[in-house]
Length: 261
Image (cartoon, rainbow, N blue to C red; front, side):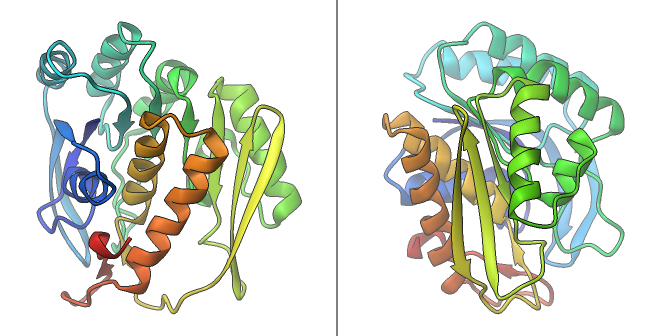
């Protein structure tokens, strides 16, 4: 596995969360750092993207040497990194790609933008068509295609639109932002819709790095040869257990217990 993402000093999200998730599921994770962030459980205060050439060089060094069976993509940060990553991905089109559409950091009161507007356009044009799966939440779905689904029918339509408009193989919209006693995630793949329902867990404090863990777990499943629906189902279960046993260590969002997943 190769994780391409930003670094989080709390180890709750980003590369560190990817490493823990992949390891917990029995995989081996190599990494390429896209950015250094300053953040904690309260939010993100600084982001410093690396040079695109350096990110690409990290990726190529790993891909030329290790038998990578899936790539998980996280925070890109800016257009230069996005373009550089896309160039590398074009040379490894046979490796399944799971793209976590990281656009904002968790826990911050001001939104903590992690992907510039220009980079969003490049993601849509150059990354999404290469992805076997993208995993946006509701706000990210709105930023990608201008739709903010509020129910199952709207989520199904939005997931289909993501695939048709962006060219990705599958779209998993996570519905944790929607109100209600049940949490709904929806997968659109090969013309079919699969809905995953689960009782909402207490989340007044929020949880840090859930999207990173989910996308990493999906990538592990695909690397093992699991079908898309099976990989997603296993990943959702993994993240739920990590949430159930989360750590209350800081003053903001709780940190996932990846070992419990």
